[in-house]
Image (tube, rainbow, N blue to C red; front, side, top):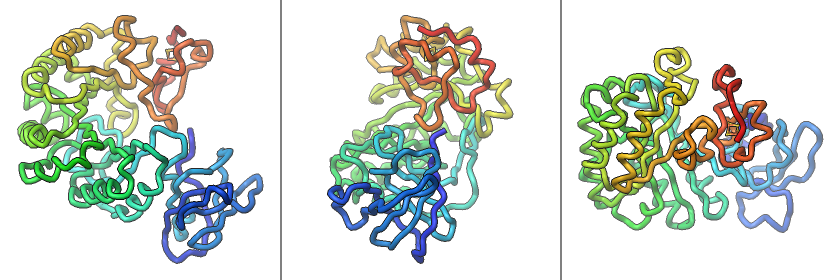
Length: 360
Ligand code: SF4
């Protein structure tokens, strides 16, 4: 796996954000830190917050990375990795749902790092699309809105893709979300079933379906950009065609519908045998749902589906969706002509599924 946290030593008195430069000519901001030396174990840097050292891990260069260095914790978090399309800010670990398959089970405590994240966004690479996730980011809705708006003020080229459970949008947000800066924001919001009781059961919260529909009404009136997300589960796969009908009837404003394969981590790890649907054997319901959505011009994507496991007719809907730092391939993938376009597997996916991989 690509390391996202590296050991670091610094005599600074507080955590600080910096952007790594390895060439003096590239230094353009007071928050830039220059690599002045390195050895096989560490990079040595100098910047606004003094001299500091960062462990190399198995990196070949940190140039262009934006780091949050925590002197007391002895660590540097690679908030943005230069050249990666998968940079995500984890803004909170709190959540007000308890989804049965949650990949990042929530915690009760919150550490507010919005100030650091705002600094980092201003240092991000040109035209970045920055992911924001949690926990539930909109539990800190005002801080989140401020982060988006302040970034847009100085960096209108930066966009955001924000994962939210959609429980906290109200009519009071409509005017704010109508501002042009929110044209750069896509909200990734899950809906697991058309039937309220099934959706509520999956997310572990009563009335969640009803609240979600109220949020969608506000988002629609605000002209917000929404990517609808549905994780494939043994409990909802049979009702996927019904969900597709519901979406075409009531949620036609969404930009796209992402059907997502399950991730073997968090709560799903111990519930895998109960929740996982092998789509290679059960593609019929998925195909019916896709056809229904596409007939009404709603784009569909298949996330976390290795391309060779998807019937040829639907294969182009399956992009390389798994973040580079947590993606792996089967030994047989080496000879595959579609590897560049393929999601592969999560690093933690059971190896047993890798055996049957057939290169394209
Ligand atoms: S063989 Fe590997 S790289 Fe090719 S489509 Fe299958 S999983 Fe993807």
